[in-house]
Every structure is written in C-alpha cells, then in structure tokens.
Amino acid sequence: QTVVTQEPTLSVSPGGAVTLTCALTSGSVSTTNYPSWYQQTPGQAPRSLIYRTSSRSSGVPDRFSGSILGNKAALTITGAQAEDESDYYCLLFVGSGVWVFGGGTKLTVL
Amino acid sequence: EVHLVESGGGLVQPGGSLRVSCAASGFTFGSYWMNWVRQAPGKGLEWVANIKHDGNEKYYADSVKGRFTISRDNAKNSLYLDMSSLRAEDTAVYYCARYSFSWSFFDSWGQGALVTVSA
Image 1 (cartoon, chains in turn yellow, red):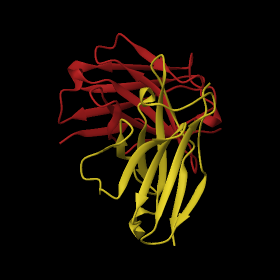
Image 2 (tube, helix red, strand yellow; image 1 turned 90 degrees about the horizontal axis):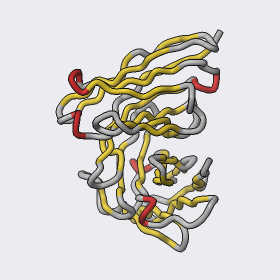
Image 3 (spheres, chains in turn blue, cyan; image 1 turned 90 degrees about the vertical axis):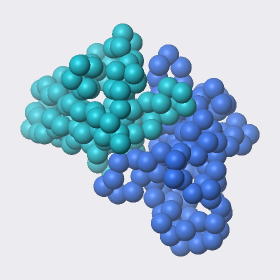
Image 4 (cartoon, rainbow over the protein chains, first blue to last red; image 1 turned 30 degrees about the vertical axis):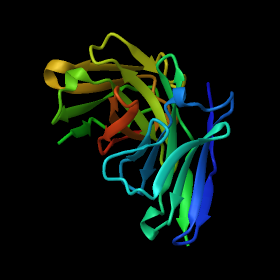
C-alpha cells in the first residue's frame, strides 16, 4: 500500500520558523491528494489545522500555513510558540476511497 | 456543536471479535461520510475505513480488509466497526471522524475508544 513519509522529529526555537513536509513514496503530492494537517497533543484527539493544501481550519492561528513545496505537501509555522510543541500528521487521499496518514512529526520548541 | 462519542472498547483475546460504536450528535449524521482512524500505543495515526453517507460505499485499509466491517445506522445516528480475527497489532485507540465532503478533510473527531488484544 502507499506510504506517506514525514520527518520523524524537528525542532524550532521560540519565535522561529519551521517547515514540516509530507511525501508520497510513489510519486509527487498534488492538490488532488487533498493534503490536510492535524495536530495532536498527548492523550488528546487530533485537531485539524489545514485542509485542501492551504486553508486553515476554524480558530487556527495564522502562523500556521500550508502549501505544496516541490513534490511534497508542507506545513509551515512562522513565529513558533511553546504551545506548538505537538505531534503533526499529514493526511493524503490516494484514490479509490483510500486515505493514508503520514508517520507523523514530533515538533519540539526549544 | 458536533459531538462524536466512541464506546465498546475493551480487552479481547487474539482471534476474537469486538464491535466499537460511535454516537453522533449536533449535525445531520445521514449527510456525512464517516471514518475510523486508529492509533496504536506510542505510534502514529492510521486510517482504517470509511463509509458513504447512505452506507452504499465502503473502503478499507489493506491491514484490516477482510477482517473489519464498517457500518452505520442513520436512524440511530451511529457508526460501527465490527472487528474479527483480532491480532495483537490491532491494539489501539479507535477514533471516529467526520469527513467534510465539501472541503475534503476530517473536520471533527471523537475522543477514542481503547481496544486491547491480548491473551
């Protein structure tokens, strides 16, 4: 089955910027994969951040943005805050009704 | 307000069966595709299955195909996942998630139900 890859761990300084990426092992990510991004803190359900590549979910701060960078989907945090320390997952539609999550990125703010 | 509440989790022996349920409220349940997503302890999210609003289309991850069955009862505002031939690797928190067809993402999530497969 299709595999979606993300950086396992990343770190960012408070106030800094970081980009998380989401890649398909079988090819390029495009808008037709409907990339979306989810944030999860320990013990909590995931929360949607970005949908359809670059649209922010309700209540999500504008320091979060989504895009396609080259052949990957990307989530950029500009002006990172301590509360952004979380796990982040991308989700891609891969056809025939099937969705695949990336392996997740554990983001540390330090 | 959208509310999704999973139930039915618990301990089951390898090879056994279990049903988890998701009770929906705060929206017109029968108008939405629904999903099951799971998360093994300390691991990432894994999409498991989805079902069309009328129940006429269902799709599964390869890891559960032939063993799990997704279903729904729109009159009861409920989503189900029937799991059989359970394995240790099926141990996970099982989340139900609503799919926004207009915007193509999972816009609401329940809090999850823990299923443990162990002898």
